[in-house]
Amino acid sequence: MHELSLAQNIIDSVREHVGDDRLPKVTEVVMEVGTASGVVGESLQFAYEAIVQGTPLASSVMTMHSVPFTVTCHACGTESESPAGYMVCPNCDSMDVSVVKGAEMILKQIVLNDD
Amino acid sequence: MSVVTIERKVLEKNDEIAMKNRARFAERKVFAVNIVSSPGSGKTSILERTLDHFQGKVPAAVIEGDVQTDLDAQRIAKHGVPVVQVVTNGMCHLEAKFVADSFDAFDGTEVRLLIIENVGNLVCPSGYDLGEAHKIVVLSTTEGDDKPLKYPAMFRNASVLLINKIDLVPYVNCDPDLMTRNALTVNPKLTVFRLSCTTGEGIAEWCAWLQRHVDALG
Image (tube, chains in turn green, blue):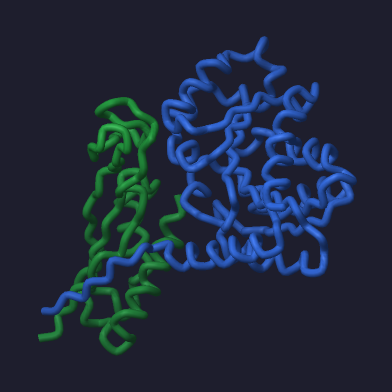
């Protein structure tokens, strides 16, 4: 996919949130990656490591939490994981479902060593 | 040690621009579709057939996305329709900002139907909202009937599936009924049309769908 440009987006957000002067203190960038987001976690980490080299974020790492693709069913009222990413309720086969999570990629937290 | 909690979508900036595009389209009563598919499925040929159908009936405009060249824009321009070519220089998808900038070129031009032809790629464009009313996914019979199951995100996010090159079914190992079932497994709400740009089959039905949506904007 386009992990390199996504990694650059993430770095821009980190800069925005912590400010340039505190960038060297960032130790960890925590991501949530949906299983249906189309993003390959390892590729994103690889891209991140490649881009931050020689920058104030060089000593930081990116960590990932995988979020299973989950739909809520308006017919039977249950919330279930739909592992293949289909818009069908795995419980009752209804197609009247909405996505709850797992289709996105979220910058969750930034950890700083500012003792 | 301190922890800053962000909870921010990585594509939030793109989504914000997409929402602005959507508001702009609504204000000008423009029905916008984003056509996505793998390379070679026939997006541009469908576009040409579609533009010919609407010639003199509905004012249309086109934004063409490609990694390199303006070959597609040259093809479209021959149909007498305003067209902007976006060359992404290697980027695998269009982003909302490209569409916002391109749409400026149509200021002062009457547009009721805006067709955005995305970069040929069955993965990346699915994640990027451009501000369109609907994503239209094109899948051709030569690509195989299993693709909806292999690339579900594109089919999950689309409203319409155009099964193209239907005239080639006798010559290729593809069952369009199975292709349809596979697509509906991923997204049961898909509207499916079968097309051939060679014979013209299905073009009228697909264009009637577009016409209904253009008319619905008043």
